[in-house]
Amino acid sequence: MGMRYYRYTLDELKESSDRKRFTYISFFAGGGGSSCGYKLAGGDARFVNEFQQVAVDTYLENWPGTPHICGDIKNVTGKKIMEMTGLKVGELDILDGSPPCPPFSMSGTKQKGWNKEKMAYGMKQQNIEDLTWEMIRIADEMKPRVIICENVKGLTMDYAKQHLDRMCTDFEAIGYTTTYKVLNGIHFGVPQKRQRVFIISVRNDVLEDIGMPWMLISSLFPDGAMNEEPTIEDAIGDLRLDNENSIEAYELCESMKKSAKYKWLKRLPKNPKKVASVGDDVVGPWYDKVIAHRKKWGKSIPERKSSFYQSRRVPWHQASHTLSEQGMQTSLAVHLHASEDRVFTTKEGKRIMTLPEDYKLTGTLNEKLARIGLMVAPMMMKYVAESIYEKVLEPYHEKNNSKT
Image (cartoon, rainbow, N blue to C red):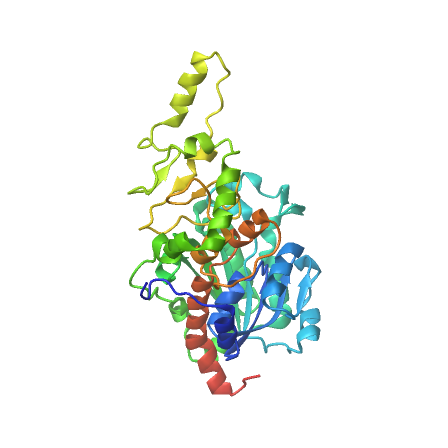
Protein backbone atom coordinates (compact mmCIF):
# COMPACT_ATOMS: atom_id res chain seq x y z
CA MET A 1 0.00 0.00 0.00
CA GLY A 2 2.59 2.56 1.07
CA MET A 3 1.97 6.25 0.57
CA ARG A 4 0.57 5.75 -2.89
CA TYR A 5 -3.01 5.50 -1.77
CA TYR A 6 -4.36 7.08 1.40
CA ARG A 7 -7.45 5.70 3.14
CA TYR A 8 -9.37 7.62 5.76
CA THR A 9 -12.74 7.74 7.52
CA LEU A 10 -15.33 10.43 8.25
CA ASP A 11 -14.08 10.53 11.87
CA GLU A 12 -10.54 11.25 10.73
CA LEU A 13 -11.94 13.88 8.40
CA LYS A 14 -13.78 15.53 11.30
CA GLU A 15 -10.68 15.47 13.48
CA SER A 16 -8.78 17.19 10.69
CA SER A 17 -11.51 19.77 10.06
CA ASP A 18 -11.79 20.52 13.80
CA ARG A 19 -8.32 22.11 13.62
CA LYS A 20 -10.13 25.05 11.95
CA ARG A 21 -7.02 26.32 10.23
CA PHE A 22 -9.13 28.35 7.81
CA THR A 23 -12.77 29.02 6.91
CA TYR A 24 -14.34 28.20 3.56
CA ILE A 25 -17.68 28.27 1.78
CA SER A 26 -18.45 26.16 -1.26
CA PHE A 27 -20.71 26.67 -4.29
CA PHE A 28 -21.80 23.87 -6.63
CA ALA A 29 -20.94 21.77 -3.59
CA GLY A 30 -22.40 18.52 -4.99
CA GLY A 31 -22.10 15.60 -2.62
CA GLY A 32 -19.06 17.23 -0.99
CA GLY A 33 -15.95 16.07 -2.87
CA SER A 34 -14.23 19.43 -2.56
CA SER A 35 -15.39 19.72 1.07
CA CYS A 36 -13.60 16.45 1.87
CA GLY A 37 -10.43 18.00 0.46
CA TYR A 38 -10.78 21.24 2.41
CA LYS A 39 -11.55 19.35 5.62
CA LEU A 40 -8.48 17.13 5.12
CA ALA A 41 -6.46 20.35 4.89
CA GLY A 42 -8.00 21.61 8.15
CA GLY A 43 -10.80 23.73 6.70
CA ASP A 44 -13.95 24.75 8.56
CA ALA A 45 -17.08 24.77 6.35
CA ARG A 46 -19.27 27.78 7.08
CA PHE A 47 -21.80 27.43 4.26
CA VAL A 48 -22.53 25.45 1.07
CA ASN A 49 -24.78 26.00 -1.92
CA GLU A 50 -25.94 23.35 -4.38
CA PHE A 51 -29.10 23.26 -6.46
CA GLN A 52 -29.80 19.53 -6.73
CA GLN A 53 -31.71 18.24 -3.73
CA VAL A 54 -30.29 14.71 -4.18
CA ALA A 55 -26.75 16.12 -3.85
CA VAL A 56 -27.67 18.23 -0.80
CA ASP A 57 -29.16 15.09 0.81
CA THR A 58 -25.83 13.30 0.36
CA TYR A 59 -23.88 16.30 1.69
CA LEU A 60 -26.01 16.60 4.84
CA GLU A 61 -25.98 12.83 5.40
CA ASN A 62 -22.21 13.17 5.91
CA TRP A 63 -22.12 16.60 7.58
CA PRO A 64 -25.49 17.20 9.25
CA GLY A 65 -26.24 20.76 10.21
CA THR A 66 -24.00 22.47 7.64
CA PRO A 67 -25.56 25.89 6.90
CA HIS A 68 -26.74 25.64 3.31
CA ILE A 69 -29.06 26.87 0.62
CA CYS A 70 -30.44 24.28 -1.77
CA GLY A 71 -31.25 26.33 -4.85
CA ASP A 72 -29.93 28.24 -7.84
CA ILE A 73 -26.80 30.30 -7.13
CA LYS A 74 -28.44 33.16 -9.04
CA ASN A 75 -30.79 33.63 -6.08
CA VAL A 76 -28.01 33.56 -3.47
CA THR A 77 -26.41 36.78 -2.23
CA GLY A 78 -23.29 37.50 -0.23
CA LYS A 79 -25.45 39.49 2.20
CA LYS A 80 -27.66 36.43 2.85
CA ILE A 81 -24.62 34.18 3.41
CA MET A 82 -23.11 36.72 5.82
CA GLU A 83 -26.40 36.87 7.73
CA MET A 84 -26.50 33.06 7.95
CA THR A 85 -22.85 32.63 8.99
CA GLY A 86 -22.01 35.75 10.96
CA LEU A 87 -19.05 36.35 8.63
CA LYS A 88 -18.24 40.00 7.87
CA VAL A 89 -17.01 41.48 4.61
CA GLY A 90 -13.37 40.51 4.05
CA GLU A 91 -13.30 37.88 6.81
CA LEU A 92 -13.80 34.65 4.87
CA ASP A 93 -10.60 32.77 3.99
CA ILE A 94 -11.66 30.74 0.92
CA LEU A 95 -14.63 31.02 -1.42
CA ASP A 96 -14.74 27.81 -3.45
CA GLY A 97 -16.72 26.56 -6.42
CA SER A 98 -16.72 24.20 -9.39
CA PRO A 99 -19.20 25.78 -11.77
CA PRO A 100 -20.57 23.28 -14.29
CA CYS A 101 -19.14 23.95 -17.73
CA PRO A 102 -20.50 21.30 -20.11
CA PRO A 103 -19.51 23.30 -23.23
CA PHE A 104 -15.82 22.97 -22.30
CA SER A 105 -15.82 19.32 -21.51
CA MET A 106 -13.05 17.44 -23.33
CA SER A 107 -15.62 14.98 -24.57
CA GLY A 108 -18.84 16.11 -26.14
CA THR A 109 -19.66 18.71 -28.72
CA LYS A 110 -17.22 21.38 -27.56
CA GLN A 111 -18.27 24.83 -28.62
CA LYS A 112 -21.39 23.74 -30.53
CA GLY A 113 -23.70 24.26 -27.60
CA TRP A 114 -22.66 27.77 -26.71
CA ASN A 115 -25.33 30.26 -25.65
CA LYS A 116 -28.11 27.78 -26.32
CA GLU A 117 -30.65 26.88 -23.72
CA LYS A 118 -30.00 23.29 -22.80
CA MET A 119 -31.07 20.58 -20.46
CA ALA A 120 -28.45 20.04 -17.81
CA TYR A 121 -28.83 18.17 -14.54
CA GLY A 122 -32.48 17.63 -15.45
CA MET A 123 -33.34 21.32 -15.63
CA LYS A 124 -33.45 23.87 -18.43
CA GLN A 125 -30.42 26.09 -18.14
CA GLN A 126 -29.68 29.19 -20.16
CA ASN A 127 -25.97 29.85 -20.60
CA ILE A 128 -24.90 27.34 -18.03
CA GLU A 129 -21.27 28.19 -18.80
CA ASP A 130 -21.66 31.62 -17.25
CA LEU A 131 -22.26 30.59 -13.65
CA THR A 132 -18.67 31.52 -12.79
CA TRP A 133 -19.87 35.12 -12.93
CA GLU A 134 -22.36 34.39 -10.16
CA MET A 135 -19.39 33.36 -8.00
CA ILE A 136 -17.60 36.56 -8.96
CA ARG A 137 -20.70 38.59 -8.00
CA ILE A 138 -20.85 36.94 -4.55
CA ALA A 139 -17.07 37.23 -4.09
CA ASP A 140 -17.38 40.94 -4.81
CA GLU A 141 -19.92 41.24 -1.98
CA MET A 142 -18.00 39.09 0.53
CA LYS A 143 -14.40 39.86 -0.44
CA PRO A 144 -12.88 36.52 0.65
CA ARG A 145 -9.09 36.41 0.97
CA VAL A 146 -8.80 33.65 -1.65
CA ILE A 147 -11.11 32.33 -4.38
CA ILE A 148 -10.59 28.83 -5.77
CA CYS A 149 -12.41 27.75 -8.89
CA GLU A 150 -12.08 24.19 -10.24
CA ASN A 151 -13.07 23.29 -13.78
CA VAL A 152 -12.58 20.89 -16.66
CA LYS A 153 -9.29 20.98 -18.53
CA GLY A 154 -11.19 21.90 -21.73
CA LEU A 155 -11.42 25.44 -20.41
CA THR A 156 -7.72 25.91 -21.23
CA MET A 157 -8.07 24.70 -24.83
CA ASP A 158 -7.89 27.10 -27.75
CA TYR A 159 -11.61 27.31 -28.35
CA ALA A 160 -12.34 28.27 -24.74
CA LYS A 161 -9.21 30.29 -24.00
CA GLN A 162 -10.98 33.61 -24.52
CA HIS A 163 -13.61 32.62 -22.03
CA LEU A 164 -10.98 31.67 -19.43
CA ASP A 165 -9.12 34.95 -19.99
CA ARG A 166 -12.35 36.84 -19.46
CA MET A 167 -12.89 35.02 -16.18
CA CYS A 168 -9.41 35.96 -14.99
CA THR A 169 -9.90 39.59 -16.05
CA ASP A 170 -13.18 39.74 -14.16
CA PHE A 171 -11.69 38.24 -10.98
CA GLU A 172 -8.94 40.86 -11.26
CA ALA A 173 -11.50 43.62 -11.79
CA ILE A 174 -12.90 43.04 -8.27
CA GLY A 175 -9.48 43.37 -6.65
CA TYR A 176 -7.76 40.00 -7.01
CA THR A 177 -4.60 38.66 -8.66
CA THR A 178 -5.41 35.48 -10.58
CA THR A 179 -3.50 32.49 -11.87
CA TYR A 180 -4.49 29.06 -13.16
CA LYS A 181 -2.92 25.68 -13.77
CA VAL A 182 -3.97 22.26 -15.02
CA LEU A 183 -3.22 19.62 -12.39
CA ASN A 184 -3.42 15.85 -12.82
CA GLY A 185 -4.93 13.83 -9.97
CA ILE A 186 -2.41 11.07 -10.47
CA HIS A 187 0.29 13.35 -9.00
CA PHE A 188 -1.76 13.91 -5.86
CA GLY A 189 -2.62 10.41 -4.71
CA VAL A 190 -5.73 10.02 -6.92
CA PRO A 191 -5.73 6.73 -8.89
CA GLN A 192 -7.12 8.55 -11.95
CA LYS A 193 -5.68 10.39 -14.92
CA ARG A 194 -7.95 13.23 -13.87
CA GLN A 195 -6.89 16.59 -15.29
CA ARG A 196 -8.58 19.70 -13.96
CA VAL A 197 -7.85 23.40 -14.17
CA PHE A 198 -7.63 25.24 -10.86
CA ILE A 199 -8.08 29.01 -10.96
CA ILE A 200 -6.72 30.74 -7.85
CA SER A 201 -7.37 34.38 -7.05
CA VAL A 202 -5.84 36.16 -4.05
CA ARG A 203 -7.07 39.52 -2.79
CA ASN A 204 -4.50 42.18 -3.64
CA ASP A 205 -4.11 43.56 -0.10
CA VAL A 206 -3.50 40.01 1.18
CA LEU A 207 -0.62 39.54 -1.28
CA GLU A 208 0.75 42.92 -0.21
CA ASP A 209 0.47 41.96 3.43
CA ILE A 210 2.43 38.71 3.07
CA GLY A 211 4.93 40.44 0.77
CA MET A 212 4.25 38.25 -2.25
CA PRO A 213 4.84 39.99 -5.59
CA TRP A 214 2.17 39.21 -8.18
CA MET A 215 4.76 37.55 -10.43
CA LEU A 216 5.14 34.79 -7.84
CA ILE A 217 1.47 33.94 -7.59
CA SER A 218 1.85 30.85 -9.78
CA SER A 219 4.04 29.36 -7.04
CA LEU A 220 0.87 28.85 -4.98
CA PHE A 221 0.08 25.55 -6.69
CA PRO A 222 1.14 22.33 -4.98
CA ASP A 223 4.00 20.62 -6.77
CA GLY A 224 2.60 17.10 -6.89
CA ALA A 225 4.58 15.62 -4.06
CA MET A 226 3.56 12.03 -4.76
CA ASN A 227 6.54 10.22 -6.16
CA GLU A 228 4.58 7.07 -6.95
CA GLU A 229 1.43 7.09 -9.03
CA PRO A 230 -1.43 5.18 -7.41
CA THR A 231 -3.08 2.39 -9.40
CA ILE A 232 -6.53 0.80 -9.49
CA GLU A 233 -4.99 -2.16 -7.63
CA ASP A 234 -3.84 0.15 -4.79
CA ALA A 235 -7.31 1.64 -4.52
CA ILE A 236 -9.66 -1.32 -4.91
CA GLY A 237 -7.62 -4.52 -5.07
CA ASP A 238 -8.73 -5.63 -1.60
CA LEU A 239 -12.43 -5.23 -2.48
CA ARG A 240 -12.29 -8.49 -4.41
CA LEU A 241 -12.80 -10.10 -0.99
CA ASP A 242 -15.40 -7.64 0.29
CA ASN A 243 -18.88 -9.16 0.67
CA GLU A 244 -20.89 -5.95 0.55
CA ASN A 245 -19.03 -4.96 -2.60
CA SER A 246 -19.62 -8.37 -4.19
CA ILE A 247 -23.37 -8.00 -3.77
CA GLU A 248 -23.43 -4.71 -5.68
CA ALA A 249 -20.92 -6.08 -8.21
CA TYR A 250 -23.28 -8.97 -8.93
CA GLU A 251 -26.18 -6.55 -9.36
CA LEU A 252 -24.09 -4.50 -11.83
CA CYS A 253 -23.03 -7.62 -13.77
CA GLU A 254 -26.69 -8.59 -14.09
CA SER A 255 -27.81 -5.14 -15.27
CA MET A 256 -24.90 -5.12 -17.73
CA LYS A 257 -26.30 -8.23 -19.42
CA LYS A 258 -29.34 -6.17 -20.45
CA SER A 259 -27.16 -3.54 -22.13
CA ALA A 260 -26.66 -3.28 -25.90
CA LYS A 261 -22.95 -3.15 -25.17
CA TYR A 262 -22.84 -6.47 -23.40
CA LYS A 263 -22.03 -8.61 -26.41
CA TRP A 264 -18.95 -6.46 -27.09
CA LEU A 265 -17.93 -6.17 -23.47
CA LYS A 266 -17.75 -9.86 -22.83
CA ARG A 267 -15.26 -10.15 -25.69
CA LEU A 268 -12.90 -7.67 -24.06
CA PRO A 269 -10.02 -9.55 -22.45
CA LYS A 270 -10.18 -9.76 -18.66
CA ASN A 271 -7.14 -8.57 -16.71
CA PRO A 272 -5.67 -6.91 -19.80
CA LYS A 273 -1.95 -6.05 -19.94
CA LYS A 274 -2.83 -2.64 -21.36
CA VAL A 275 -5.98 -0.56 -21.73
CA ALA A 276 -8.51 -2.46 -23.84
CA SER A 277 -11.28 -0.44 -25.43
CA VAL A 278 -14.30 -1.55 -27.41
CA GLY A 279 -13.08 0.47 -30.38
CA ASP A 280 -9.69 -1.15 -30.24
CA ASP A 281 -8.10 -3.02 -33.10
CA VAL A 282 -6.24 -5.18 -30.63
CA VAL A 283 -9.56 -6.50 -29.45
CA GLY A 284 -10.78 -6.68 -33.03
CA PRO A 285 -12.49 -3.92 -35.01
CA TRP A 286 -15.95 -4.77 -33.72
CA TYR A 287 -17.78 -2.47 -36.01
CA ASP A 288 -16.56 -4.26 -39.12
CA LYS A 289 -17.69 -7.56 -37.64
CA VAL A 290 -21.13 -6.11 -36.94
CA ILE A 291 -21.38 -4.92 -40.54
CA ALA A 292 -20.30 -8.25 -41.96
CA HIS A 293 -22.85 -10.00 -39.77
CA ARG A 294 -25.62 -7.58 -40.71
CA LYS A 295 -24.87 -7.73 -44.44
CA LYS A 296 -25.07 -11.48 -44.32
CA TRP A 297 -28.59 -11.30 -42.90
CA GLY A 298 -29.63 -8.34 -45.03
CA LYS A 299 -30.22 -6.15 -41.99
CA SER A 300 -29.85 -2.38 -41.93
CA ILE A 301 -26.33 -1.28 -41.08
CA PRO A 302 -26.08 0.56 -37.77
CA GLU A 303 -24.35 3.87 -37.44
CA ARG A 304 -20.79 3.56 -36.18
CA LYS A 305 -21.22 4.00 -32.43
CA SER A 306 -18.24 5.94 -31.21
CA SER A 307 -19.88 6.08 -27.78
CA PHE A 308 -18.86 2.43 -27.40
CA TYR A 309 -15.24 3.37 -27.99
CA GLN A 310 -15.07 5.20 -24.70
CA SER A 311 -15.79 1.92 -22.94
CA ARG A 312 -12.45 0.84 -21.62
CA ARG A 313 -11.07 -1.81 -19.37
CA VAL A 314 -8.05 -0.39 -17.58
CA PRO A 315 -5.57 -2.93 -16.16
CA TRP A 316 -5.04 -3.29 -12.42
CA HIS A 317 -1.54 -1.81 -12.55
CA GLN A 318 -2.63 1.53 -14.08
CA ALA A 319 -4.66 4.51 -12.91
CA SER A 320 -8.27 4.78 -14.04
CA HIS A 321 -9.43 7.13 -16.76
CA THR A 322 -11.26 10.21 -15.46
CA LEU A 323 -14.46 9.13 -13.76
CA SER A 324 -17.41 11.18 -14.98
CA GLU A 325 -21.10 11.57 -14.19
CA GLN A 326 -22.14 9.87 -17.43
CA GLY A 327 -19.34 7.32 -17.45
CA MET A 328 -20.27 5.96 -14.05
CA GLN A 329 -23.84 5.10 -15.12
CA THR A 330 -24.64 1.40 -15.20
CA SER A 331 -26.09 1.51 -18.71
CA LEU A 332 -23.31 3.49 -20.41
CA ALA A 333 -20.54 1.24 -19.19
CA VAL A 334 -17.60 3.55 -19.85
CA HIS A 335 -15.35 2.57 -16.93
CA LEU A 336 -15.08 -1.20 -16.88
CA HIS A 337 -13.78 -3.30 -14.04
CA ALA A 338 -10.45 -4.94 -14.88
CA SER A 339 -11.67 -8.49 -14.43
CA GLU A 340 -15.48 -8.38 -14.55
CA ASP A 341 -18.07 -7.38 -17.15
CA ARG A 342 -19.42 -4.35 -15.31
CA VAL A 343 -18.81 -0.76 -14.29
CA PHE A 344 -17.32 0.14 -10.90
CA THR A 345 -19.44 -0.26 -7.77
CA THR A 346 -20.13 2.72 -5.47
CA LYS A 347 -17.48 1.43 -3.07
CA GLU A 348 -14.91 1.14 -5.87
CA GLY A 349 -15.95 4.52 -7.25
CA LYS A 350 -15.50 6.14 -3.84
CA ARG A 351 -11.99 4.71 -3.54
CA ILE A 352 -11.00 5.75 -7.07
CA MET A 353 -12.27 9.26 -6.28
CA THR A 354 -10.42 9.26 -2.87
CA LEU A 355 -13.55 9.69 -0.73
CA PRO A 356 -13.69 8.54 2.90
CA GLU A 357 -14.13 4.80 3.41
CA ASP A 358 -17.48 5.23 5.14
CA TYR A 359 -18.73 8.14 3.04
CA LYS A 360 -22.51 7.90 2.77
CA LEU A 361 -24.27 8.18 -0.59
CA THR A 362 -28.01 8.68 -0.99
CA GLY A 363 -30.47 8.03 -3.82
CA THR A 364 -30.70 5.26 -6.43
CA LEU A 365 -27.65 3.30 -7.56
CA ASN A 366 -27.30 5.49 -10.66
CA GLU A 367 -27.70 8.68 -8.60
CA LYS A 368 -25.00 7.48 -6.22
CA LEU A 369 -22.65 6.67 -9.09
CA ALA A 370 -23.39 10.01 -10.82
CA ARG A 371 -22.70 11.82 -7.54
CA ILE A 372 -19.21 10.28 -7.40
CA GLY A 373 -18.42 11.06 -11.05
CA LEU A 374 -19.32 14.75 -10.63
CA MET A 375 -17.04 15.33 -7.67
CA VAL A 376 -13.83 17.20 -7.25
CA ALA A 377 -11.35 14.50 -6.20
CA PRO A 378 -10.78 15.19 -2.47
CA MET A 379 -7.04 14.47 -2.50
CA MET A 380 -6.48 16.96 -5.33
CA MET A 381 -8.33 19.63 -3.38
CA LYS A 382 -6.49 18.73 -0.16
CA TYR A 383 -3.10 19.46 -1.73
CA VAL A 384 -4.31 22.68 -3.36
CA ALA A 385 -5.87 23.90 -0.09
CA GLU A 386 -2.81 22.97 2.00
CA SER A 387 -0.57 24.84 -0.38
CA ILE A 388 -2.78 27.96 -0.21
CA TYR A 389 -2.95 27.69 3.56
CA GLU A 390 0.82 27.37 4.01
CA LYS A 391 1.80 30.02 1.47
CA VAL A 392 -0.97 32.60 1.94
CA LEU A 393 -3.41 32.18 4.81
CA GLU A 394 -1.05 31.07 7.57
CA PRO A 395 1.45 33.91 7.01
CA TYR A 396 -1.46 36.34 6.66
CA HIS A 397 -3.11 35.22 9.91
CA GLU A 398 0.22 35.27 11.76
CA LYS A 399 0.82 38.81 10.61
CA ASN A 400 -2.67 40.05 11.40
CA ASN A 401 -3.35 37.76 14.32
CA SER A 402 -6.91 37.75 13.06
CA LYS A 403 -7.96 34.15 13.55
CA THR A 404 -11.70 34.59 13.71
